[in-house]
Each structure stands twice: as C-alpha cells, then as structure tokens.
Length: 135
Length: 152
View 1 (cartoon, rainbow over the protein chains, first blue to last red):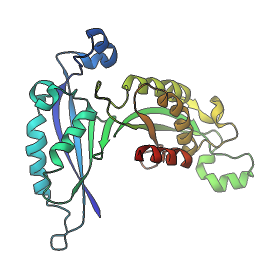
View 2: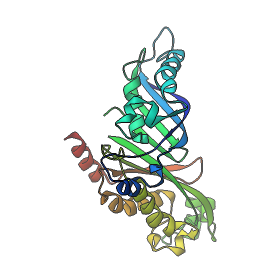
View 3: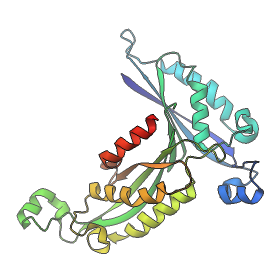
View 4: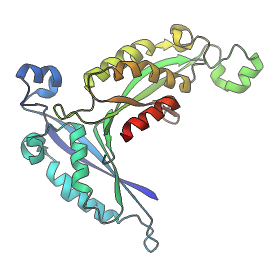
C-alpha cells in the first residue's frame, strides 16, 4: 500500500455565526471570528490517497486526474469565495476548518479515479490544521 | 472524528546530564549536549486534539481554551528558562526533548480533557530542531482506554 499526497492552495473568507445563539453568545463563543463581514485565509489542502501501485504505470493514480478532480470539486467551489454566502453547504453549517475539511472529504471521496481517499489535511494557517479520515 | 493541531513556539536551554553517571560517562552518553553551561533551542510544540465536531459551533474544541491551556501550562512555564534549574519539572530527570514532550502532554491533558467540548488531547509533537522531533500520545493504558472508547 502506498500513500500519495497532493497539495493545493485556495483563498477564501468566512465568519463564524450560529443563528441559534444570541448576538452576545456568538461574540463570546466565536470572538473576532464572528465579525459579520468575514475575514480570509490562504488555505492549504493536502489530499492523501491510499492504494496499490499499478504494475503497468508504477502509479497509485494518475496525478493529472487527481489535480483535475481537486480543481473541479474543491478549488472552483471555494477559491476566492466568501464561504458562508457562496458555498451552499455552509449556509446551514458553520465553515470552520473542521467542517471545511469534512466537506472536502465528502466532495472528493466518490470522485477519485482510483485508489481510496485516506486523509484530508486542511491548513488554515501555517500553525493550525485539521485532519479528517472519513470517520 | 476530526483532529485539530495547533503549533506554538518557545525558546529554552537545557543540559543533558545525569548525576548518577561519572563525568566521563556523561560526556560519552550525551556528547556536546553535556556542555556544562547548557545550550538552547527554539522549540516548536504541536498539540493535537481529537473528537467529534460539535454541530452548534462547528468545532472540535474552543481554540481559546486550547490557547489558554498551552499559554499557562507550557509557554509561561518553559519559555526563556533554563530547564535544568528554572523549573521544578526536571528535578531528578534529564530534560531531554523526550522527557519534555511527555511532561507537556501530562501538563495539558487534565486542562484540555476538563473542557466542556468533545475534544480530547490526542498527541503532543515537539520539535527540538527542524531535524529532530518527538511525539507522545499518552501512556499505553490511556491509549487502550481511548481505543475502547472510539470503538463504542
């Protein structure tokens, strides 16, 4: 079994707000992330695919295909977007780094041409990242 | 389950020396790390917490709680200190990065696990230099309990 990781970057803005909480609770829980106009990050996403090496190609999967899927499913949806307003799933779900990582998993898991999605690692900054393994 | 990792930095000095060993043995075992006045590192500590995402906040753990715990338990205690003399944690224990990594885990675990959210401390990874790093995920018994909990 080989694990292959491809990295991509996108820039997006978000804010944290739960309409079930009062304005004061939202400010207390989410702090400056509650600013309604949003704030942005340069996200780095690492997609790790696990699989057997194909004997005829020496590859787990064709990197061009992985790049294309990542581009179509993630970057086109999220790059240079205000996640709360422009990505439908985040209309009802707070676009925390945790939830974005899970969403990226959900977008990619069924679309890989070969291999099995193993991990999504999403960096919000160089000092903060989350890992999701699909369960 | 999602794991969240945050990275923090502190600078400290240490000397690897065991009183129970002779001067020659200390020199042989610890090499230049046995230099009598100590030497320093810029440490990077990565703290990983793991748990289900709270649907009302979208978070595994309140980052403010994590920051405060690391600030109080790790950074205020160890930053800009000589680990051998300035903190009681290494009395009778060599302040290797292995021991420091375990110590940080043990300091953080009760603070983080007492938080109201679902996240629990899963791992401490400590970089002494960009070439050397150490990881601790708790005592074996804790890991077994954790594995049992995850299975349920």
